[in-house]
Amino acid sequence: MSCELPEALQDVVTRLSRLPGMGPKSALRVAMTLLSWPEALTRELGMSIVQLREKLHLCNRCGGLSQTVTCPLCADPSRTQDTLCIVTDWDSELTMERGGFYHGQYLVLGGLISPLENSNADKLNLDLLEKRLNEGIIREVIFALGATLEAENTAAFLQGLVTSRFPGVRVTRLAQGIPLGSEVKNMDMETLRQSLKYRQDLR
Ligand SMILES: [Zn+2]
Figure 1 (cartoon, rainbow, N blue to C red):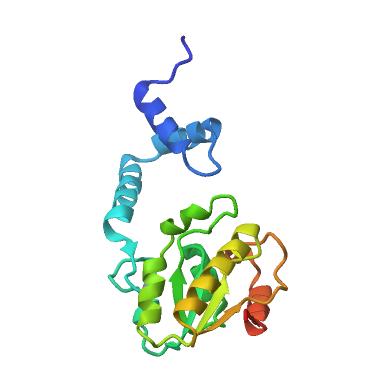
Figure 2: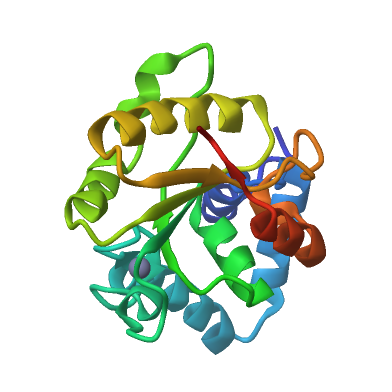
């Protein structure tokens, strides 16, 4: 076929197409843009992608992305030490943090449990959660998992885990003013601030 792309270009297009929101057409457009850039600029982009994997790892306290073993949030002694906010992913931690209304600790769960596949709980950062609670400092766990079916299911699972193993720990979740189906990372700041302020006890 005469319209086949040169192999090197096809290779980049195929890889770019795996990115979220990127179909083959837009991947080709990106690849062509990269080709039109000065070589140094393209090289720098390539290097930053490589360094993303080399420099970033997961914080040993919250499981969020960090360039240091313990991320700056977890290492900050001025933050409230006895409140642990559990979020689904690191984006949600960022969103909460940008709001500036929460000053406690975080834990990134790394996913949610779908009601249909209860078995994927082992993919979550439960070890990290147990480690934090075992330290005996956390007095309240706040679920900030969003208002999806998966979030509800996960909150119920975690609530069972926390209340059975750590009966002295208060368990709350963001107030139900959150629009149904919404994820924490996509919520507007005021809604998020209000739902944290009026968080509900889960028992
Ligand atoms: Zn951290």
